Image (tube, rainbow, N blue to C red; front, side, top):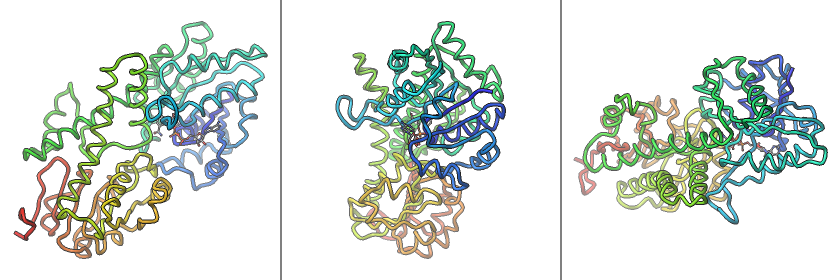
Length: 462
Ligand SMILES: NC(=O)c1ccc[n+]([C@@H]2O[C@H](COP(=O)([O-])OP(=O)(O)OC[C@H]3O[C@@H](n4cnc5c(N)ncnc54)[C@H](O)[C@@H]3O)[C@@H](O)[C@H]2O)c1
Protein backbone atom coordinates (compact mmCIF):
# COMPACT_ATOMS: atom_id res chain seq x y z
CA UNK A 1 0.00 0.00 0.00
CA UNK A 2 1.16 3.53 -0.76
CA UNK A 3 0.03 6.43 1.38
CA UNK A 4 -0.91 9.22 -0.98
CA UNK A 5 -1.56 12.73 0.28
CA UNK A 6 -2.90 15.65 -1.68
CA UNK A 7 -2.56 19.16 -0.28
CA UNK A 8 -5.30 21.37 -1.74
CA UNK A 9 -8.88 20.11 -2.12
CA UNK A 10 -9.97 22.34 -5.00
CA UNK A 11 -11.16 21.77 -8.58
CA UNK A 12 -8.03 19.70 -9.28
CA UNK A 13 -7.12 18.07 -5.96
CA UNK A 14 -10.62 16.76 -5.22
CA UNK A 15 -11.50 15.11 -8.55
CA UNK A 16 -7.98 13.76 -9.31
CA UNK A 17 -7.61 12.14 -5.92
CA UNK A 18 -11.14 10.74 -6.02
CA UNK A 19 -10.26 9.07 -9.32
CA UNK A 20 -6.94 7.69 -8.00
CA UNK A 21 -8.73 6.31 -4.93
CA UNK A 22 -11.44 4.74 -7.05
CA UNK A 23 -8.98 3.10 -9.44
CA UNK A 24 -6.41 2.07 -6.80
CA UNK A 25 -8.27 0.51 -3.85
CA UNK A 26 -4.92 -0.80 -2.54
CA UNK A 27 -3.66 2.75 -1.86
CA UNK A 28 -4.82 5.08 0.89
CA UNK A 29 -5.58 8.56 -0.43
CA UNK A 30 -6.01 11.55 1.88
CA UNK A 31 -6.93 15.02 0.66
CA UNK A 32 -6.21 17.90 3.03
CA UNK A 33 -7.02 21.59 2.91
CA UNK A 34 -6.87 24.57 5.27
CA UNK A 35 -10.43 25.46 4.31
CA UNK A 36 -12.67 23.66 6.83
CA UNK A 37 -15.86 24.49 4.89
CA UNK A 38 -14.47 22.86 1.73
CA UNK A 39 -13.45 19.74 3.61
CA UNK A 40 -16.88 19.52 5.28
CA UNK A 41 -18.47 19.76 1.85
CA UNK A 42 -16.20 17.00 0.46
CA UNK A 43 -17.34 14.85 3.38
CA UNK A 44 -21.00 15.46 2.53
CA UNK A 45 -23.10 14.69 -0.52
CA UNK A 46 -23.18 18.40 -1.38
CA UNK A 47 -19.69 18.60 -2.86
CA UNK A 48 -17.98 22.02 -2.99
CA UNK A 49 -17.81 21.96 -6.81
CA UNK A 50 -20.31 20.94 -9.47
CA UNK A 51 -18.81 18.42 -11.87
CA UNK A 52 -20.88 15.77 -13.70
CA UNK A 53 -20.20 12.26 -12.37
CA UNK A 54 -17.96 13.44 -9.52
CA UNK A 55 -20.28 12.54 -6.65
CA UNK A 56 -20.57 8.95 -7.89
CA UNK A 57 -16.77 8.57 -8.00
CA UNK A 58 -16.38 10.10 -4.53
CA UNK A 59 -19.07 7.84 -3.12
CA UNK A 60 -17.33 4.69 -4.37
CA UNK A 61 -14.11 5.45 -2.48
CA UNK A 62 -14.91 7.83 0.38
CA UNK A 63 -14.49 6.15 3.76
CA UNK A 64 -12.90 3.12 2.05
CA UNK A 65 -9.54 4.49 0.90
CA UNK A 66 -10.39 8.14 0.28
CA UNK A 67 -10.41 10.61 3.16
CA UNK A 68 -10.87 14.38 3.37
CA UNK A 69 -9.40 16.23 6.34
CA UNK A 70 -7.91 19.48 7.61
CA UNK A 71 -5.06 17.68 9.40
CA UNK A 72 -2.29 18.76 7.05
CA UNK A 73 0.65 18.04 9.41
CA UNK A 74 -0.56 14.53 10.26
CA UNK A 75 -1.13 13.81 6.57
CA UNK A 76 2.45 14.83 5.76
CA UNK A 77 3.93 12.55 8.42
CA UNK A 78 2.03 9.51 7.07
CA UNK A 79 2.50 10.12 3.34
CA UNK A 80 4.85 8.41 0.88
CA UNK A 81 3.80 10.54 -2.08
CA UNK A 82 2.56 14.11 -1.62
CA UNK A 83 0.68 15.77 -4.47
CA UNK A 84 0.58 19.54 -4.04
CA UNK A 85 -2.46 21.03 -5.71
CA UNK A 86 -2.77 24.43 -4.08
CA UNK A 87 -3.75 27.52 -6.02
CA UNK A 88 -1.13 29.47 -7.98
CA UNK A 89 -2.96 32.68 -8.94
CA UNK A 90 -1.53 35.68 -10.76
CA UNK A 91 0.48 37.93 -8.48
CA UNK A 92 -1.36 41.10 -7.51
CA UNK A 93 1.52 42.93 -5.84
CA UNK A 94 5.23 43.68 -6.15
CA UNK A 95 7.50 42.55 -8.98
CA UNK A 96 5.60 40.78 -11.74
CA UNK A 97 2.20 41.98 -10.46
CA UNK A 98 -0.53 41.18 -13.00
CA UNK A 99 1.57 38.54 -14.79
CA UNK A 100 3.83 36.34 -12.67
CA UNK A 101 2.50 33.40 -10.66
CA UNK A 102 2.01 34.01 -6.97
CA UNK A 103 3.90 31.09 -5.44
CA UNK A 104 3.32 31.94 -1.79
CA UNK A 105 0.85 29.07 -1.21
CA UNK A 106 3.20 26.65 -2.90
CA UNK A 107 6.21 27.73 -0.91
CA UNK A 108 4.29 27.65 2.37
CA UNK A 109 3.30 24.08 1.59
CA UNK A 110 6.88 23.09 0.80
CA UNK A 111 8.05 24.53 4.12
CA UNK A 112 5.26 22.74 5.95
CA UNK A 113 6.34 19.46 4.35
CA UNK A 114 9.95 19.95 5.49
CA UNK A 115 8.83 20.86 8.99
CA UNK A 116 6.71 17.76 9.49
CA UNK A 117 8.37 15.03 7.45
CA UNK A 118 10.12 12.29 9.39
CA UNK A 119 11.28 10.27 6.37
CA UNK A 120 11.93 10.54 2.59
CA UNK A 121 9.04 11.55 0.34
CA UNK A 122 8.14 12.17 -3.26
CA UNK A 123 6.69 15.64 -3.67
CA UNK A 124 4.57 16.00 -6.81
CA UNK A 125 3.87 19.33 -8.47
CA UNK A 126 0.21 19.02 -9.46
CA UNK A 127 -0.41 22.76 -9.52
CA UNK A 128 0.52 24.62 -12.70
CA UNK A 129 3.85 26.31 -12.07
CA UNK A 130 6.44 28.43 -13.88
CA UNK A 131 9.16 26.36 -15.51
CA UNK A 132 12.06 25.76 -13.09
CA UNK A 133 9.92 26.02 -9.95
CA UNK A 134 11.05 22.52 -9.02
CA UNK A 135 14.58 23.85 -8.70
CA UNK A 136 13.51 26.26 -5.93
CA UNK A 137 11.39 23.55 -4.33
CA UNK A 138 14.27 21.11 -4.22
CA UNK A 139 16.39 23.73 -2.48
CA UNK A 140 13.74 24.42 0.16
CA UNK A 141 12.99 20.73 0.70
CA UNK A 142 16.47 19.27 0.68
CA UNK A 143 18.16 21.82 2.93
CA UNK A 144 16.72 20.35 6.09
CA UNK A 145 18.46 19.67 9.40
CA UNK A 146 17.51 15.96 9.44
CA UNK A 147 19.02 15.30 5.99
CA UNK A 148 15.77 13.77 4.74
CA UNK A 149 15.78 13.28 0.98
CA UNK A 150 12.90 14.59 -1.14
CA UNK A 151 12.36 13.91 -4.82
CA UNK A 152 10.40 16.56 -6.70
CA UNK A 153 8.31 15.27 -9.60
CA UNK A 154 6.19 17.33 -11.99
CA UNK A 155 2.80 15.84 -12.90
CA UNK A 156 0.67 18.66 -14.32
CA UNK A 157 -3.05 18.15 -14.59
CA UNK A 158 -4.76 18.42 -17.97
CA UNK A 159 -8.38 17.88 -16.93
CA UNK A 160 -10.96 20.36 -18.16
CA UNK A 161 -13.70 21.49 -15.81
CA UNK A 162 -17.08 20.20 -16.95
CA UNK A 163 -15.53 16.99 -18.32
CA UNK A 164 -13.12 16.31 -15.45
CA UNK A 165 -14.31 12.79 -14.72
CA UNK A 166 -14.18 11.72 -18.35
CA UNK A 167 -10.74 13.32 -18.72
CA UNK A 168 -9.42 11.60 -15.60
CA UNK A 169 -10.90 8.23 -16.47
CA UNK A 170 -9.44 8.16 -20.00
CA UNK A 171 -6.79 10.89 -20.28
CA UNK A 172 -5.18 11.69 -23.65
CA UNK A 173 -1.94 11.41 -21.73
CA UNK A 174 -0.47 11.61 -18.25
CA UNK A 175 2.76 13.57 -18.01
CA UNK A 176 5.38 12.82 -15.37
CA UNK A 177 8.67 14.72 -15.28
CA UNK A 178 11.58 14.20 -12.96
CA UNK A 179 15.31 14.32 -12.44
CA UNK A 180 17.61 12.11 -14.50
CA UNK A 181 19.25 10.76 -11.31
CA UNK A 182 18.60 7.22 -10.09
CA UNK A 183 16.36 8.42 -7.29
CA UNK A 184 14.62 10.88 -9.67
CA UNK A 185 13.86 8.03 -12.09
CA UNK A 186 12.52 5.86 -9.27
CA UNK A 187 10.24 8.72 -8.20
CA UNK A 188 8.94 9.07 -11.77
CA UNK A 189 8.22 5.34 -11.81
CA UNK A 190 6.41 5.45 -8.47
CA UNK A 191 4.06 8.18 -9.72
CA UNK A 192 3.64 6.55 -13.15
CA UNK A 193 2.77 3.23 -11.45
CA UNK A 194 -0.17 4.85 -9.66
CA UNK A 195 -1.68 5.94 -13.00
CA UNK A 196 -0.77 2.67 -14.71
CA UNK A 197 -3.50 1.02 -12.63
CA UNK A 198 -6.00 2.31 -15.21
CA UNK A 199 -4.14 4.37 -17.84
CA UNK A 200 -2.42 2.41 -20.65
CA UNK A 201 1.39 2.66 -20.26
CA UNK A 202 1.82 4.16 -23.73
CA UNK A 203 -0.26 7.14 -22.60
CA UNK A 204 2.05 7.88 -19.70
CA UNK A 205 4.74 10.23 -20.98
CA UNK A 206 7.88 10.71 -18.93
CA UNK A 207 10.20 13.68 -19.46
CA UNK A 208 12.71 15.79 -17.62
CA UNK A 209 11.38 18.17 -14.98
CA UNK A 210 11.56 21.34 -17.03
CA UNK A 211 9.81 19.90 -20.11
CA UNK A 212 6.98 18.71 -17.92
CA UNK A 213 6.54 22.03 -16.10
CA UNK A 214 6.72 23.98 -19.35
CA UNK A 215 4.39 21.63 -21.29
CA UNK A 216 1.45 22.51 -19.07
CA UNK A 217 1.87 26.24 -19.70
CA UNK A 218 2.33 25.61 -23.41
CA UNK A 219 -0.73 23.35 -23.65
CA UNK A 220 -2.93 26.05 -22.16
CA UNK A 221 -1.32 28.73 -24.31
CA UNK A 222 -2.00 26.72 -27.50
CA UNK A 223 -5.60 25.98 -26.50
CA UNK A 224 -6.31 29.62 -25.69
CA UNK A 225 -4.55 30.69 -28.87
CA UNK A 226 -7.00 28.63 -30.97
CA UNK A 227 -9.93 30.35 -29.32
CA UNK A 228 -8.43 33.79 -29.84
CA UNK A 229 -7.58 32.92 -33.45
CA UNK A 230 -11.15 31.98 -34.37
CA UNK A 231 -12.53 34.89 -32.34
CA UNK A 232 -10.29 37.32 -34.21
CA UNK A 233 -11.68 35.90 -37.45
CA UNK A 234 -15.26 36.23 -36.12
CA UNK A 235 -14.77 40.01 -36.04
CA UNK A 236 -13.77 39.96 -39.72
CA UNK A 237 -16.73 37.70 -40.57
CA UNK A 238 -19.14 40.23 -39.10
CA UNK A 239 -17.74 42.91 -41.43
CA UNK A 240 -17.75 40.77 -44.56
CA UNK A 241 -20.90 38.60 -44.34
CA UNK A 242 -18.78 35.48 -44.03
CA UNK A 243 -20.09 32.99 -41.45
CA UNK A 244 -17.55 31.99 -38.82
CA UNK A 245 -19.15 28.55 -38.34
CA UNK A 246 -18.75 27.84 -42.05
CA UNK A 247 -15.17 29.11 -42.01
CA UNK A 248 -14.36 26.99 -38.93
CA UNK A 249 -15.83 23.91 -40.59
CA UNK A 250 -14.01 24.56 -43.85
CA UNK A 251 -10.62 24.97 -42.22
CA UNK A 252 -11.21 22.33 -39.54
CA UNK A 253 -11.59 19.56 -42.12
CA UNK A 254 -7.91 20.07 -42.94
CA UNK A 255 -6.31 17.34 -40.87
CA UNK A 256 -3.31 19.58 -40.19
CA UNK A 257 -5.60 22.08 -38.49
CA UNK A 258 -8.21 19.77 -36.95
CA UNK A 259 -11.79 20.60 -36.09
CA UNK A 260 -11.72 20.94 -32.31
CA UNK A 261 -11.54 24.18 -30.33
CA UNK A 262 -12.65 26.27 -33.27
CA UNK A 263 -15.92 27.47 -31.80
CA UNK A 264 -16.24 31.21 -31.76
CA UNK A 265 -17.66 32.79 -28.60
CA UNK A 266 -17.57 35.75 -26.25
CA UNK A 267 -14.10 34.59 -25.23
CA UNK A 268 -12.41 32.11 -22.96
CA UNK A 269 -12.62 32.24 -19.19
CA UNK A 270 -11.72 30.00 -16.31
CA UNK A 271 -9.00 30.23 -13.74
CA UNK A 272 -6.22 28.90 -15.97
CA UNK A 273 -5.91 30.19 -19.54
CA UNK A 274 -5.31 33.86 -18.81
CA UNK A 275 -3.21 33.21 -15.72
CA UNK A 276 -1.01 30.63 -17.43
CA UNK A 277 -0.44 32.68 -20.58
CA UNK A 278 0.49 35.75 -18.53
CA UNK A 279 2.82 33.55 -16.54
CA UNK A 280 4.40 32.37 -19.83
CA UNK A 281 4.67 36.00 -20.97
CA UNK A 282 6.38 36.96 -17.73
CA UNK A 283 8.82 34.07 -18.02
CA UNK A 284 9.73 35.06 -21.58
CA UNK A 285 10.19 38.68 -20.53
CA UNK A 286 12.44 37.69 -17.66
CA UNK A 287 14.61 35.68 -20.07
CA UNK A 288 14.79 38.73 -22.39
CA UNK A 289 12.58 37.10 -25.06
CA UNK A 290 10.54 40.24 -25.78
CA UNK A 291 9.14 39.16 -29.16
CA UNK A 292 8.01 35.79 -27.81
CA UNK A 293 6.36 37.49 -24.84
CA UNK A 294 4.53 39.95 -27.10
CA UNK A 295 3.34 37.13 -29.36
CA UNK A 296 1.62 35.27 -26.51
CA UNK A 297 0.31 38.37 -24.81
CA UNK A 298 -1.73 39.07 -27.92
CA UNK A 299 -3.82 35.95 -27.20
CA UNK A 300 -5.06 37.57 -23.98
CA UNK A 301 -5.55 40.95 -25.68
CA UNK A 302 -7.78 39.43 -28.37
CA UNK A 303 -9.80 37.71 -25.66
CA UNK A 304 -10.37 41.03 -23.88
CA UNK A 305 -11.22 42.63 -27.23
CA UNK A 306 -13.85 39.97 -27.94
CA UNK A 307 -15.62 40.63 -24.64
CA UNK A 308 -15.53 44.40 -25.12
CA UNK A 309 -16.77 44.00 -28.69
CA UNK A 310 -19.72 41.98 -27.45
CA UNK A 311 -20.80 44.71 -25.03
CA UNK A 312 -20.21 47.48 -27.59
CA UNK A 313 -22.36 45.56 -30.06
CA UNK A 314 -25.22 45.32 -27.54
CA UNK A 315 -25.04 49.07 -26.88
CA UNK A 316 -25.01 50.13 -30.52
CA UNK A 317 -27.71 47.63 -31.51
CA UNK A 318 -30.02 48.77 -28.74
CA UNK A 319 -30.10 52.37 -29.97
CA UNK A 320 -26.99 53.47 -28.05
CA UNK A 321 -28.57 53.44 -24.64
CA UNK A 322 -28.99 50.68 -22.10
CA UNK A 323 -29.88 52.86 -19.12
CA UNK A 324 -32.79 51.29 -17.24
CA UNK A 325 -33.21 48.46 -19.79
CA UNK A 326 -33.58 44.94 -18.45
CA UNK A 327 -31.03 42.54 -19.91
CA UNK A 328 -31.17 38.87 -19.00
CA UNK A 329 -27.79 37.14 -19.11
CA UNK A 330 -28.21 33.39 -19.44
CA UNK A 331 -25.14 31.78 -17.90
CA UNK A 332 -22.62 32.89 -15.30
CA UNK A 333 -20.26 29.89 -15.33
CA UNK A 334 -17.21 30.26 -17.59
CA UNK A 335 -18.37 27.18 -19.51
CA UNK A 336 -21.14 24.60 -19.32
CA UNK A 337 -21.25 21.85 -16.70
CA UNK A 338 -19.29 23.67 -14.04
CA UNK A 339 -20.15 25.98 -11.16
CA UNK A 340 -16.84 27.81 -11.63
CA UNK A 341 -17.11 31.52 -12.46
CA UNK A 342 -13.44 32.46 -12.20
CA UNK A 343 -12.56 34.83 -15.09
CA UNK A 344 -15.95 34.07 -16.63
CA UNK A 345 -16.60 36.20 -19.74
CA UNK A 346 -20.19 36.47 -18.56
CA UNK A 347 -19.16 38.43 -15.50
CA UNK A 348 -17.10 40.84 -17.60
CA UNK A 349 -20.10 41.41 -19.86
CA UNK A 350 -22.17 41.90 -16.72
CA UNK A 351 -19.77 44.61 -15.49
CA UNK A 352 -19.81 46.30 -18.91
CA UNK A 353 -23.64 46.42 -18.94
CA UNK A 354 -23.80 47.76 -15.40
CA UNK A 355 -21.49 50.60 -16.41
CA UNK A 356 -24.17 51.53 -18.94
CA UNK A 357 -26.75 51.49 -16.14
CA UNK A 358 -28.60 48.47 -17.53
CA UNK A 359 -30.64 46.34 -15.11
CA UNK A 360 -28.94 42.96 -15.31
CA UNK A 361 -30.71 39.72 -14.44
CA UNK A 362 -28.25 36.86 -14.19
CA UNK A 363 -29.42 33.26 -14.54
CA UNK A 364 -27.46 30.02 -14.16
CA UNK A 365 -28.37 26.50 -13.00
CA UNK A 366 -25.30 25.99 -10.79
CA UNK A 367 -23.06 29.05 -10.64
CA UNK A 368 -25.07 31.89 -9.08
CA UNK A 369 -23.49 31.53 -5.64
CA UNK A 370 -19.96 31.81 -7.05
CA UNK A 371 -21.02 34.64 -9.38
CA UNK A 372 -22.39 36.62 -6.46
CA UNK A 373 -19.12 36.18 -4.56
CA UNK A 374 -16.95 37.08 -7.60
CA UNK A 375 -18.94 40.22 -8.40
CA UNK A 376 -18.41 41.63 -4.90
CA UNK A 377 -20.15 44.96 -4.31
CA UNK A 378 -21.61 44.95 -7.83
CA UNK A 379 -23.76 41.97 -6.85
CA UNK A 380 -26.14 44.35 -5.07
CA UNK A 381 -27.09 45.90 -8.43
CA UNK A 382 -27.89 42.55 -10.04
CA UNK A 383 -30.95 40.33 -9.85
CA UNK A 384 -29.95 36.66 -9.51
CA UNK A 385 -32.64 34.39 -10.92
CA UNK A 386 -32.09 30.64 -11.41
CA UNK A 387 -35.21 30.28 -13.59
CA UNK A 388 -34.33 31.50 -17.12
CA UNK A 389 -38.00 32.12 -18.01
CA UNK A 390 -38.40 34.46 -15.04
CA UNK A 391 -35.06 36.11 -15.87
CA UNK A 392 -36.24 36.88 -19.40
CA UNK A 393 -39.63 38.21 -18.36
CA UNK A 394 -40.05 41.90 -19.28
CA UNK A 395 -36.45 41.97 -20.55
CA UNK A 396 -35.45 44.10 -23.55
CA UNK A 397 -32.68 41.70 -24.47
CA UNK A 398 -31.16 38.31 -23.73
CA UNK A 399 -27.44 37.58 -23.75
CA UNK A 400 -26.60 33.89 -24.07
CA UNK A 401 -23.37 33.65 -22.07
CA UNK A 402 -22.82 29.98 -21.19
CA UNK A 403 -23.51 27.00 -23.44
CA UNK A 404 -25.62 25.09 -20.88
CA UNK A 405 -27.83 22.64 -22.79
CA UNK A 406 -30.89 23.82 -20.87
CA UNK A 407 -30.53 27.26 -22.46
CA UNK A 408 -30.46 25.79 -25.96
CA UNK A 409 -33.59 23.79 -25.12
CA UNK A 410 -35.73 26.70 -23.84
CA UNK A 411 -39.15 27.36 -25.35
CA UNK A 412 -38.14 30.58 -27.10
CA UNK A 413 -41.68 31.37 -28.22
CA UNK A 414 -42.65 31.51 -24.55
CA UNK A 415 -39.55 33.59 -23.80
CA UNK A 416 -40.32 36.01 -26.65
CA UNK A 417 -43.94 36.44 -25.61
CA UNK A 418 -42.87 37.59 -22.13
CA UNK A 419 -40.32 40.17 -23.34
CA UNK A 420 -40.47 43.87 -24.19
CA UNK A 421 -40.55 44.47 -27.97
CA UNK A 422 -38.48 44.82 -30.07
CA UNK A 423 -36.83 41.83 -28.41
CA UNK A 424 -33.11 41.29 -28.94
CA UNK A 425 -31.06 38.18 -28.45
CA UNK A 426 -27.26 38.15 -28.47
CA UNK A 427 -25.96 34.61 -28.80
CA UNK A 428 -22.50 34.74 -27.25
CA UNK A 429 -21.97 31.02 -27.86
CA UNK A 430 -23.58 30.49 -31.24
CA UNK A 431 -25.58 27.54 -29.95
CA UNK A 432 -29.12 28.70 -30.77
CA UNK A 433 -31.19 28.16 -33.90
CA UNK A 434 -30.89 31.69 -35.23
CA UNK A 435 -33.32 31.33 -38.13
CA UNK A 436 -36.01 29.92 -35.84
CA UNK A 437 -35.49 32.75 -33.33
CA UNK A 438 -35.81 35.28 -36.16
CA UNK A 439 -39.04 33.68 -37.33
CA UNK A 440 -40.42 33.91 -33.79
CA UNK A 441 -39.78 37.67 -33.94
CA UNK A 442 -36.41 38.12 -32.22
CA UNK A 443 -33.70 40.38 -33.59
CA UNK A 444 -30.82 37.94 -33.51
CA UNK A 445 -27.14 38.84 -33.07
CA UNK A 446 -24.79 35.86 -33.26
CA UNK A 447 -20.99 35.97 -33.11
CA UNK A 448 -19.19 36.04 -36.46
CA UNK A 449 -22.38 35.86 -38.50
CA UNK A 450 -24.63 38.48 -40.05
CA UNK A 451 -27.43 39.51 -37.67
CA UNK A 452 -31.02 38.60 -38.47
CA UNK A 453 -32.98 41.74 -37.74
CA UNK A 454 -36.52 42.93 -38.32
CA UNK A 455 -35.32 46.52 -37.96
CA UNK A 456 -33.89 48.75 -40.66
CA UNK A 457 -30.82 50.96 -40.20
CA UNK A 458 -32.95 53.62 -38.46
CA UNK A 459 -34.42 51.05 -36.07
CA UNK A 460 -37.85 50.84 -37.76
CA UNK A 461 -39.67 47.50 -38.29
CA UNK A 462 -39.21 46.25 -41.81
N1 LIG B 1 -9.13 24.31 -12.28
C1 LIG B 1 -8.64 23.66 -13.31
O1 LIG B 1 -9.35 23.32 -14.25
C2 LIG B 1 -7.17 23.30 -13.37
C3 LIG B 1 -6.74 22.39 -14.35
C4 LIG B 1 -5.40 22.05 -14.38
C5 LIG B 1 -4.51 22.62 -13.48
N2 LIG B 1 -4.94 23.52 -12.56
C6 LIG B 1 -3.97 24.05 -11.59
O2 LIG B 1 -4.12 23.35 -10.37
C7 LIG B 1 -3.86 24.22 -9.26
C8 LIG B 1 -5.04 24.23 -8.34
O3 LIG B 1 -6.17 24.73 -9.04
P1 LIG B 1 -7.65 24.62 -8.48
O4 LIG B 1 -8.55 25.12 -9.55
O5 LIG B 1 -7.86 23.26 -7.91
O6 LIG B 1 -7.56 25.71 -7.28
P2 LIG B 1 -8.55 25.88 -6.06
O7 LIG B 1 -8.42 27.28 -5.63
O8 LIG B 1 -9.91 25.34 -6.43
O9 LIG B 1 -7.96 24.90 -4.92
C9 LIG B 1 -6.78 25.13 -4.23
C10 LIG B 1 -6.99 24.71 -2.79
O10 LIG B 1 -5.74 24.76 -2.11
C11 LIG B 1 -5.99 25.12 -0.77
N3 LIG B 1 -4.76 25.58 -0.13
C12 LIG B 1 -4.06 26.72 -0.37
N4 LIG B 1 -2.97 26.76 0.44
C13 LIG B 1 -3.00 25.65 1.20
C14 LIG B 1 -2.15 25.14 2.23
N5 LIG B 1 -1.05 25.79 2.60
N6 LIG B 1 -2.49 23.97 2.81
C15 LIG B 1 -3.60 23.31 2.43
N7 LIG B 1 -4.44 23.74 1.46
C16 LIG B 1 -4.15 24.90 0.86
C17 LIG B 1 -7.06 26.19 -0.88
O11 LIG B 1 -7.76 26.35 0.33
C18 LIG B 1 -7.95 25.62 -2.01
O12 LIG B 1 -9.02 24.86 -1.51
C19 LIG B 1 -3.53 25.59 -9.87
O13 LIG B 1 -2.15 25.70 -9.98
C20 LIG B 1 -4.16 25.52 -11.24
O14 LIG B 1 -3.50 26.34 -12.16
C21 LIG B 1 -6.27 23.86 -12.47
